[in-house]
Image (cartoon, rainbow, N blue to C red; front, side, top):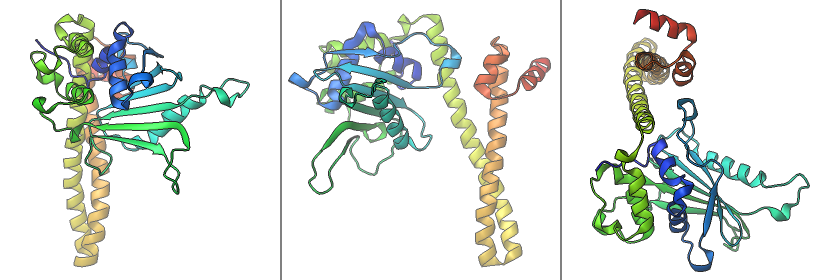
Length: 318
């Protein structure tokens, strides 16, 4: 049995964004936010429920979730694999946007409901050791939460190191599932009597997916792999060019002072030039693959950023 990687954009949306399996999302949200008894979420509705997407729609990994509990509060969940920088600021932006969009034209502020942001990250952004951290607006003097309409939870997957036999809470089980499902061949005993997890593993079973879903899943995985390789190659080339130029210029201006300034400037320019060259070459390689798979020019332009003229030239050379 082969399970999909829940960190893959398509798999994440298919597992957690299917309104025919709402109890998966409900269980996940309640475990992350530690909602129990009278505070537990009992129903959810999504602004963008799962549908098999087109390639050009695979740019965002955000699930806009509206979860109904006693107070009708709103929830945003984002799965982010790559560290693109400024993630904390992005979370503030999406949360404030969801808050403002509740406001009717008559500006009745009393209707505004609390917004929760949950970020699942395949990288780290905070220095603490805990894999989950919660952030509130706190009164500095009294340490009380006087402004309650915003709450942020960040799950940093690299910090989760528990083995299958160490899983205790429902949250532990969800994080282990997200992190390790693609490495499993059977549903672990720790999950067998938990209905939400049985459904999640069922949806993640790739033998039950249709051909289009499998192709899109592989396309996303390949694109991520190519992007990582391109970046690493560009960095290595940039470092080599930067060191060479920095050494040369630094020697001319004087060993101590010149070496320092030249290395810094040379490495900066070299990194930039190397990354640009590496990314352009990788875009060409991706375009050539897509041409062989009969993708149209507009789609290839959207994916690679190359001009239509360049793509036509590549077609002619194939």
